[in-house]
Image (cartoon, rainbow, N blue to C red):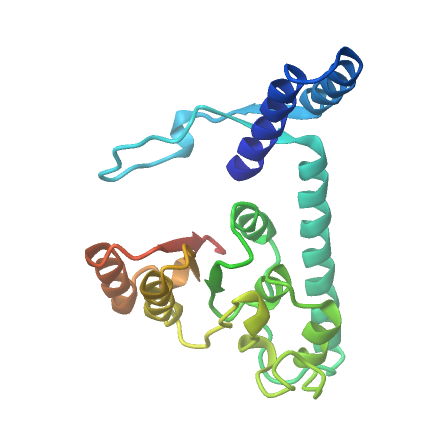
Length: 238
């Protein structure tokens, strides 16, 4: 949300700056566009109790601004994720999907919120609830469902199944079947971003069940000591 808000404010500010340099007619047209953009904005107040800090020098802003059109798109994306998972459960019950199936139902907002501020050049890695993460990184519904059913036209040619989806064009390094394994691997991907100097970050998502894994704390320490561009996101799925 914060990334979208900043972009919206920049666009409005750009319209105002340009209006001072153009003819009166053009200035009127640009001014109207600027007012329309401002009317499309929604401001939210963020209560202080929403956040908990530990050795943070910078605090989260008390308000944020987002475009209504962005909110609608966020909702559509969450609805798509929910429908895909509902269909996956139906296919599993009817034995079209064999083996394991870990759905992402109830966590859609976490993913949509984090992806809203990421760039396509950033990277992502997650646990075994990875269907929607694959879609968020540019995967298709067809390839997702095909992978779940073990088909060759799936994103991992039917060999990964529910827990091991992968999408290199979107810098998605898959789901991981071992609890907490994505933490240190995510730190390694972040190290690659820093080594290449491409300005990218890696988001490593994990469930609250992995929050007590030793390898996760080791990944935290390595990321801090080496100043890695890593973001560790705990998705509370209890």
